[in-house]
Image 1 (tube, one colour):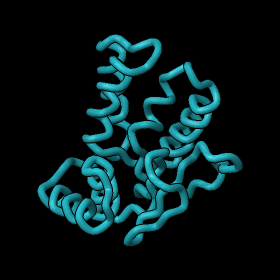
Image 2 (cartoon, helix red, strand yellow):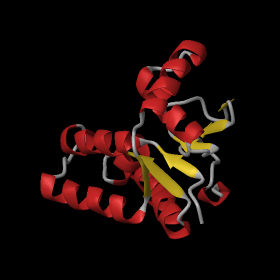
Image 3 (cartoon, rainbow, N blue to C red):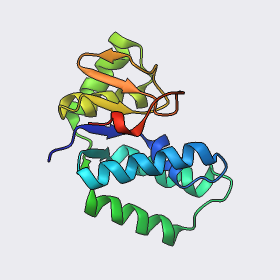
Image 4 (spheres, rainbow, N blue to C red):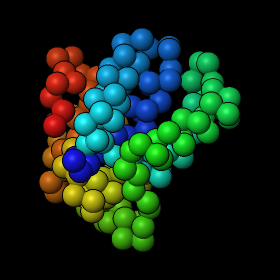
Length: 149
């Protein structure tokens, strides 16, 4: 199967953060389902932000050996999109035309240019669709992992 869902950084981080057990459980279920179905994708931006967040911003930070193993795992078992010049240009357009923050625009641009119609993130208004990319916050009440393609 090909990738259908782009996973934003916060989904990865919550899977490693025991401070919020509900979000941790939902994130683990999402990652497991997408990995098993091979329909999930990440970007190098997401992986870089993940490294910073889990080593500095969670209650029980991971050591760099654990982080390296996690990143190696994602690189081996997930589709990971590189950052390209076209993604940067599209992100600039997203900032200008859709008023995204730059980093959110880059997530949107990576999904759009790689023809992924769904982004899982709590950083966007859930249910919003912009130029064929729909944003879903998987932590909103009532959302179920079974809704994933």
